[in-house]
Length: 470
Image 1 (cartoon, rainbow, N blue to C red):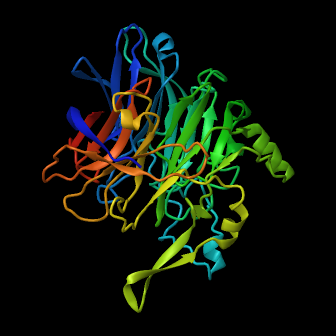
Image 2 (tube, helix red, strand yellow; image 1 turned 90 degrees about the vertical axis):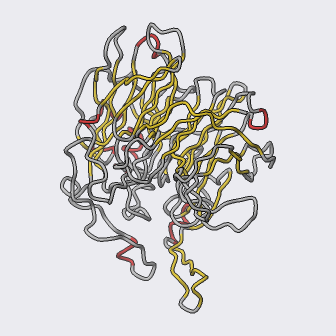
Image 3 (cartoon, rainbow, N blue to C red; image 1 turned 30 degrees about the vertical axis):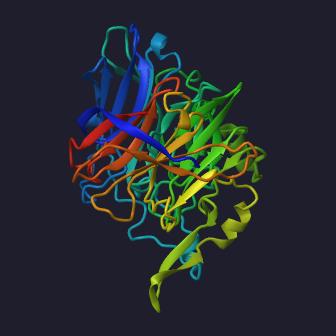
């Protein structure tokens, strides 16, 4: 693919971990402004070069980094504006709730062992006491010339582990005008309880929420499974996809009168994958529950399955051990053979993948996929119609750490495609630069990149948001 070079133009710096970048026109406003949500619970608004705090919910966010050496995957994870935000002032938040810290679902480190069936059939027991934290999805409103205020809670989700909660996890579909929630598999590694493939589990799914239904203020129960929800909430939900490990949101790209959907699945040991699909058939949660009660399989035609936990992108999920006679080699053993077989024909193949080890001179060894964003602008002509993605940090030298920006695009024959690294001109000096999120304006003609100087949420004010310019 063609090599592309862009400039990174700083917009704002010294900002706490920037996890979501969106634009919107405020009710009563005249100009599209930039919103930056941070993992610690602040949302900043930038217009005409000025920056102010739009919302600060730091007291409502779970204490971050205390038990994990500063690293954390919880916090303020999702921000989305209603398609009619300018008129109704509605926006939506997904965050990890203060005061909900639990002991976790397992008392020891999990690793699957194909020779020990007990490790392949773990069950999440005592869920009401053995969990890590609670996530909430809320609807807020900006009254005309007023301060944002919470209107209602849509979901309260009990999560088994600290990690894999999704990021940039709320987006509105331009097709269905529903709120799309992208949830990770609940964490640990290797999805110990296979939540991502279980049709009743909320974890590991892409879910559409019809926010026009059940609009009265309510306090939903804290749940982990769809059949634990009250019927009025069940009736607002459809499931777009399952088989998700961890996911940095969903991006839509208009193609004539249809939309290409792009999603990424963060890998385990081998590969990071970007998927694309045009047609899909979401399944109402009420139907999933009926099929569960009858012990029948739902109609899965055009239902999207990303394949996890049996598949890691295009590979059967493997456990990796060092080879005793050669320290430079790894032994890879299929962790979940039967699940890989069962989902082999149903899963979606990735559009492209990149790998944790890659010796090719024009590629890189990646760490973790952090963002996927379609681009429709003409300002950077070589990227028009492509989808960009970011990796947190290259694994190989040089030091200090550097993230990666890359792109791919849909092939006309529908086959998988390669990707190309995008070169950038910015000099980060001796500071580390982890690429943590991407964003775009409303018509996807301008692109934004968020970079952080540390892997720790406890290291404040090391973030910068850039615009990509030719």
